[in-house]
Amino acid sequence: MASADVSVAQASTTALPRKRVRPGELAVQAVLFAAAVISVLTTVGIVLSLLLPALEFFGEVSPVDFFTGTTWAPLFLDAHFGVLPLVVGTLMISFWSSLVAFPLGVGVAIYLSEYAAPKATAFLKPILEILAAIPTVVLGYFALTFMTPFLRDQIGLQVEVFNALSASLVLGIMLIPTIATLSEDAMAAVPRDLRDGGYALGADKLQVSTRIVVPAAISGIIAAFVLGFSRAVGETMIVLIAAGQLAQITFDPRQTIETITAFIGATGNGDVPTGSIEYKTIFAVGLTLFVMTLVMNLVSIRLVRKYREVYE
Amino acid sequence: MSADLAAMETDRKSRALRNRLFQIAMLSCMFVAFGTLVVLLADTIITGWPALSQQLLTGLPSTEPGEAGARPAILATLYLGLLVLFFSVPIGVLTAIYLEEYADRERWWNRAIEVNIQNLAAVPAIVYGILGLAFIVRGIGVGRVVLAGGLILTLVVLPTVVVSSREAIRAVPDSIRQGAFALGATKWQVVWRQVLPASIPGIATGSILALSRAVGETAPLIMVGAITYVAFNPTLFGPYTALPVQIYNWTKQPDADFQTLAAAAAIVLLVIVLSMNAVAIFLRNRYRKQW
Image (cartoon, rainbow over all chains, first blue to last red; front, side):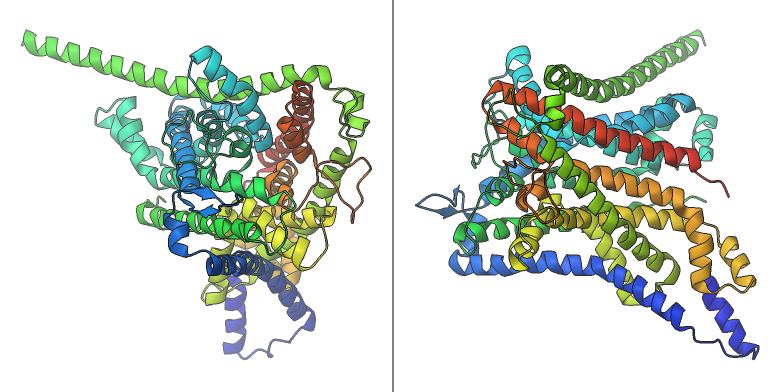
């Protein structure tokens, strides 16, 4: 901390006895640094464990075929390794779940921050946070055994048993608490003065909410969106259980599809022989996923910095 | 003049209407969000209740849905939780202390550690599963055992523990540190006897939240081989299946009775995870200190 540095600096200028070297303190510092390095080693481990088998994979399958191919059938005798169906499936799930989660999440945040009584917010927000922790395997079960029959029998949609739509809807529901609490945090941080200024100029509550509070909190809301989208891209269990394992390029959410994560989850649990091309496929696909989420996270950090409003 | 007044009146009315509609729209968002989650919980409880029996809690898995239980899975989840606590809390808190109290932000490696943790928090859990598959299970050769699963889950939740511990440590005001320094305390004495005790509620909250996430996590465990059929109590170095994985396996079965079992096991998991979360959030709101 800065305070310690200042005290050391002052000690040297006022010619007090030199600071005693304490071996214990140095040892503590070494232990702390070692703990911090573990996280760096984790990243190195992830990158290495993905990159090395993926490079071997690209020695056997050309990267051009991999990134532009439109047929994904790595386990077939006549194997095809075009990753596009998986990418399209992933993006479609993320798109539909975002369509559910973004408006509803921000709506909940606006209600909690601008309309609900403070006591109601103090009661409802913790419940929302608790609900954010529902395990994804339970959500996947719900998508398969409740949402799909509901869409088919009650709404009358011609959905397959495994379909992108019910997985997306449930994934969207899963994201709402996260997006709502993060957006509400951002809106709660907007100073009262700004709202009062708006009211003083004759604005009504709708105008204050949508033209003052939301723009002022936009960096937090955008960060919540990117985090939500990136979680949708990386979510495994819901899509593995409810969206199926049929890699095809389709933009019809009623169809069975396969996402990147579902492929990894479905292939990684079997006893795929080490060193086989199927085994290496997991890593090539995993690397694709890792890069996608990494880029989104870097974009999010950028956006937050760019649009951040600082209030004192 | 009267025309102006009439115009103002209609303007006021349409404004009031718009405001009303907006408020109703926001309120409906609340109802949809909470409503679906309530439907989810209700559906799981109604489906699973008949199968929620002592057999489920203490029995062994079976190919007969009527005789199947989840004791090995529940025990393994308990072990995994303890392992995650044992590893992630010390490593996470020490990292947080380093970053908040010792690290010089001017040094590039300290900034790199920070950005690195930010990025790790955004890595999908299944990617940690791939890491586990490559290193722990096959590379080092620990095998598909409880310890391997615990280590992978530790890595999954470590960023959460670090971030929440940092926030807790940062919330301790500098005057406390300066007071201790003024009394002649060394740096570590300040951290160990003043800063850390003051930040314990925040650290506890973050740790319990991380633990509840680890307990409900499925995808990485599938990758590091929480195998399907374990008809004995797990040990630290033995094969295992965890409760979420058991739910996944039962969900996959075509037999409807197994899906009922899945719902019953889901109730058990929900009770464990949601009550841990409730405790954590209660702790946070109860002990939130105003300096």
